[in-house]
Amino acid sequence: MSRPPVTGATRLCAVIGDPVRHSQSPRLHNAAYEALGLDRIYLALEVPAGHGRTAVRSMLDLGIDGLNVTMPHKEDAADACDELTADAAALRSVNTVVRREDGTLLGASTDGEGFLRSLADAAIDPAGAPALVVGAGGAARAVVAALGRVGAEVTVAARRPGAAAAAAALAPGGRAVTLDAVDEVLGAVALVVQATPVGMDGSSQPFDPAGLGPDHAVCDLVYHPAVTPLLAAAVARGARTVGGIGMLLHQAALAFELHTGHAAPLDAMRAALDG
Image (cartoon, rainbow, N blue to C red; front, side):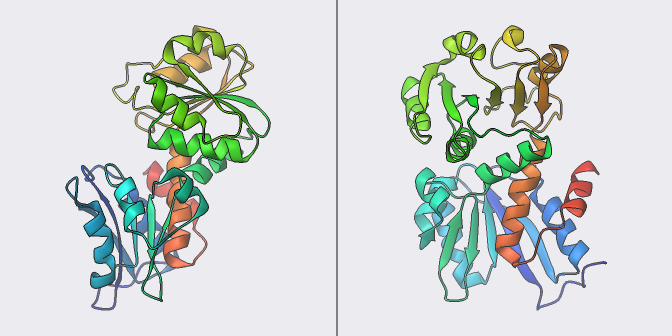
């Protein structure tokens, strides 16, 4: 099924960020619109830092149905919304905004649930498992909260002790350590989540992977390259691995459903990423 031609009646959704031209969101969402024959179009809008709140509130004046939000606007988007979902409120971070019929804006965070669904695709169940999250930024915090929600025993390792402690507090019983302590923690965990940008250059690793082995499941949220240096090292040591593409796909699918009210056509969205 192909999408209708763009007319004055075509509905608009978009992603805002700075930078944003590299975003995969237009590819994912437009493929979904086409698969379902929806009269919608999805664009990437570059919004300078400091203008995120204004951009989100402009949805009401411009009639934009939904926004996705990437760095550096996630906190500003939370402040701009009239209501937040439980996850977004806990994180004070929003990656999806919906303009509702009553003229109010709902802010959500789909990253955590998207992460859990990517693990489910790989038949990895984190419930009750000891897990290590490396990083304390926005993506890491969403992962920590999601893991805590399903009962994982979460340890957060980050360069800044204060940031690690704040992230760990999002999971019941979560604890924080420095990056220097990762080697000591690895032997006691089953799931390792790399949630920093390290590895995007195709050569760097966030920690020494020598402690990884067949008893580990290793997830790297970096999705380009698809196989990061950490994942390659984990495979060589017999660990199960999950790349960042799955989380990218599922967080977008959840956002699509919030924006449109339709079930996401996952096969079409996955094919758009593969293409």
